[in-house]
Amino acid sequence: MENANGTTLQEFVLLGFGLDPSKQYIILIFLTILYVLTLVENVTIITVVLLDAQLSQLPMYILLSNFSWMEICYVTTTVPRMLFDLTSSHGIISIQACLIQFYVLFSLGTAEFFFLSAMALDRYLAICHPLHYSQIMTPNSCYVLVAACWFLGFLGYIVPVTLISTLSFCGPNIIDHFLCDPGPILSLACPPVGNIPLLCQIVINTLFLANVFFVVISYGVVIFTLMKSSNQGSRKKAFSTISMHLLVVTLFYGSVGGMYLIPSGESQSEFTKAITLFYTTFTPFVNPLIYCLRNGQVKEALRRIIRRIFVKAKV
Image 1 (spheres, rainbow, N blue to C red):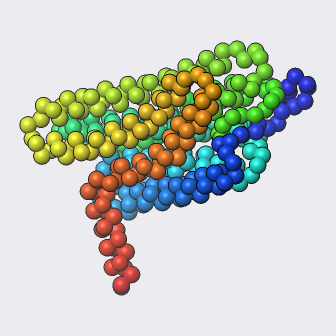
Image 2: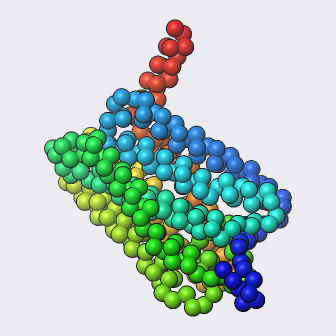
Image 3: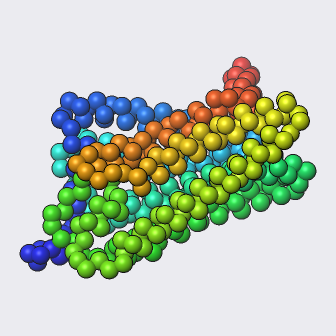
């Protein structure tokens, strides 16, 4: 990859947060604590679902445990690199490593889109078609759904990252961000870049909007069905469950969707960084809390496991 002077560009420079050392040190401590807590929360959910005989057979918790595993991968794609760059002054990353980070990060983000859609489908079938739910959402069919979420998530960005990897990059090789985003990467490409930026935008928009549409329709039908229900007890319980799902959906889709509404101007870079930091670090931290804070089944399963551990310890 050569620039105008004929020299080969082998690396990019991530500017990061652009703060003074004292503030970067505070961010370093904050992100380290947040990362560790995120790992602990999601590992706890996975462990509880795997060890509890009841939860491990329920479709919603099969999806939730895989969602937690995806969240672990998601934060690990970005946060360790952020922490490394906060402790160094150069922020150098090879072009190949940058493209890998872009592909893995956006693929995992897309997998999260599909997992949120799968959870919406699960709630739709459970509430709107309760008599057929156990026949449709068997553990085996749920595992197929999980595999489809992972496969489709990593399928979507194969073509964009392959096309971007064929481009030549001109100096300067500076990316005003703390991770490898396709927009800044494409802005450094030597012209002509053809239709690659348009194709990337089409892929991003299609994957995002298709899943948003599916989730909105699914939960819209669920809410409409619950409003017609005469059973106050079951309606209240169902509303409590889907309200947690809707909060997770709103946090993630709202922050990612905000990237498409960024105004032009001098503050664009700072606004982009703030939103990106929110959905790459904060939402994976709060999602386990939201899903399990008011979830009696998870709490009871955790109590059973703790009691089992204490009983074995006494023996």
